[in-house]
Length: 628
Image (cartoon, rainbow, N blue to C red; front, side, top):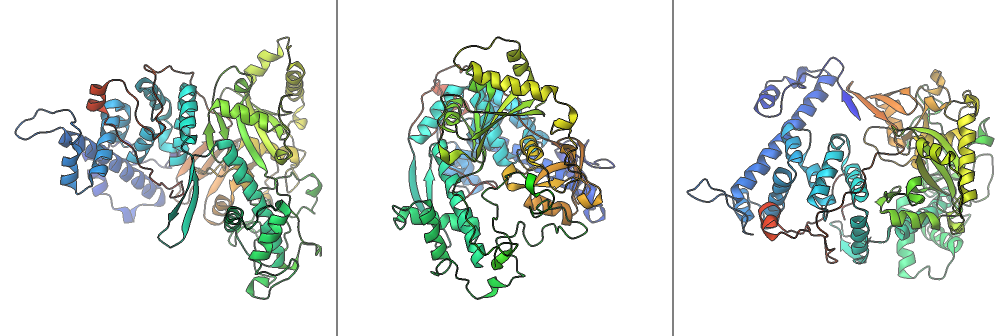
């Protein structure tokens, strides 16, 4: 992502340090226009990052200093206590900061240099340290080389996922062993919160089981929410999911099938009233927005001059061709507490089957040509072995192949099917498996005489590729104008947008496509057209910001956006179908996996004492994660 200030950034050429500090000190902030205020904020951020690097250097030097001499000594295990005594920290905190100083200044000096320049903050340096736990130093150096240029534009969780994605590609064995060690520590624990409530959490669960469990829970909750909305009871999906979760575990719902579970939860949350009863109260006001609304109160208004929600009723001209994009946040049975629109008084029924993209895997990995990591959308990356097994478990899902160019931009979207040996579990029939493939790989396969057990399966894929490659522009979703004059995209175009924009296109947002809305970049009522180069995925919050909070979007090329925020600062983003990954790099030394907890692996005790103290890191919440 790129950021630029129209008219120039007055601090851009000033290096972080005394010069930038002086420039900031004499800047009359109250007299600056919005663009310059944003530039001032970025400069202040650079200066803080520089100061954090100076502080880390001061901690390192203090821990290695001795009275009456300028000679520095190695860490004897007690050195951080000097920093703790001087700064009013605990020994644990001082040890953690000293270890970070050694990591960024000695072990990985590129990180330290980036901090001195102000482009990398200390928290992101910590993420590099924690996410590469157990890798060899030369592998960590390669991770830093690849990811550091991207780090300033990535949010914390996105940075962690990118580091892990690259690390798993560099050493698939490390990834598999690290996952196995974590799963061996799987447990369920409770923790009281300051409010008096209790957190009941499962830790280190197998990713495939956790994904199915969470998706099934969400699907059950959506069905309950729709039925409660019909009864005039307003409950969020999160609250309902938590109630189902606890009731399933406390034995209340033991032995019930999914419809019976939903019946029981509806009865409980509706105040013990039988299905069909409508409680009196403020929630029954027909004019009040309930959980059946497709957007929050201040969201875009389809009827107003600024609205462009793209969530119009399906009974319009686009209805018959509208895609099935229902997901855990969908609101079946819209129309408020008086029942569904059109006078239908039947209680809504929602199948308790999860929807959405369940897996992203590279075709080369599926064919056994490499061991690149897979992705479980919403949960992050996972080793190639887990991804391959997961793919075979999802045989009943809809399979599609995303063909991309060398820059990672989508050029073809092909329907496929699971391998012959895949399992067809009906629970997964509404889910999607996305296989990414460079066009060069399919071109190479197209010239080969494919044979063997999977000959017909691969031949199917190549036939679909040829059809898409040879299709006229009007038959290709990237260029078709079939839906241009319709309010909503048809199924094929909707799938194309969701594949091209797998997450919200707003800067820094990671909301999955199935939770986003198809937004016209140029508003429909202002002449926008329903085409691939005129639509984008925006989450509800960023959609509201676009219409009500001064954000503007321009789609210069399909999937590539110029976004201007309310200060006038310009951000440039592009769609991401696949990101480049390195080839494996063998570690200098094999490393053991500690089943009791992560620990830096090394065979040189003296080197460890000199450059990286052994420590156990404590989990730290950040702005992207729940506090556990």
